[in-house]
Image 1 (tube, helix red, strand yellow):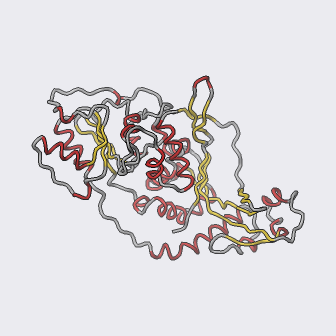
Image 2 (cartoon, one colour; image 1 turned 120 degrees about the vertical axis):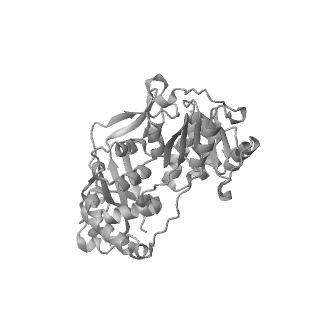
Amino acid sequence: MSILRITYLIAFCCCLFGVSLGQSARSQSQSSTPVDTGSTLNQDELRELWVAHPGPLILDAHNWYPSDVSTAEDGTIRAESLAEVAQMSLRRHVVVGRADVLARRKDVPSLMAVGEGAGLWDFVRTRSDALFKGLSFQQLTADEHELILSVTRTNASVNQAVQDRKDVPLFIKARITILDQGEDRTFFTIPEKDNRQPSIRPSGQAEWMTPKTTTEELPKSLDFGEGRLLSVQQIVAILSGMGYTCRYDARLGEPKVFLKGKFTTTEILEGMREVLDTIPFFVQDRRAIVKDATKTYRELVIKGLMEEGFPQELAERIGDDGRAKFTRAELMNVPIIARRFGPVWQDLTVEESLTGTLMLYADCGEDWVTPMPGGQMWSGHTGILMRIIRPG
């Protein structure tokens, strides 16, 4: 298994357990090149990812991580479009001469401008009625579409379905957790889909993989070969050595940029101009939203529990933290719980601790798989989204 594939698996696990992707890559990578603290991936990993790109290429690599939708079975980027690669990784694709530039986005959608967690809460609280019934990917607004693309970027099957705007319903569900004999038992009602289909990774020859020629001079100092990961400050130093004076915000000096191939002077100067074009200052007063978040969250949990078959009088005993205690006899009034514990609970007077948690759920019916040697199929991602919602 390649270094990059190992990193993907680590990153996926970290996403599940709340560890930052940057921390994971920096602590777990075994590459021969030391991992730089200013970048999600190191130079060797970036070279492996972009092996199909002939250059010239400029990538704003600071906290950059590709979507699995863009990668082939060998862990290299093989997407049909670099605009797709950019969108999937929160970048914008700009062509400067022969150079492909993946720079940080400036036109951040409103739901993303507040951060993914806060944006997801805004989406859920404003669209809860539709989400309880099932909101198709086809019905998402442009801003909502961008948000869900970001939310699903670690699950290739669902991410591809969102990107293609397939008619897949997105739900909010109440996930029920009961502490039973010292262990959490978690369950919720979801109809299983039969005959799941495999999704195959991209593997074709895209237009951007074809080398581009030029009659202009290609300075030796602007030949970055198979790829180099440099700070903005280091790149400016190279340009200064060529006789160019470059002014930029000094606070942007340390973030890393990945450069590959041979550049003309114009290509690298204009490409770096795009990279250094920063996001405008953004402010949103969220005091009222945060103040009401606990109350709103509890109301949504109660509604979700009632959707799961809880009688209203039981669901409304849930506290602001989604927790409550019920006797087993009371819980026998909930069909999903009665089916699970009815045969094993003997003493119905015992109190059980129950937690209701909001969850975003979707099942695209396809699983992202990678063919392995010998004809075996390795499933990289099940095409099911289960994302816990936090208030505020």
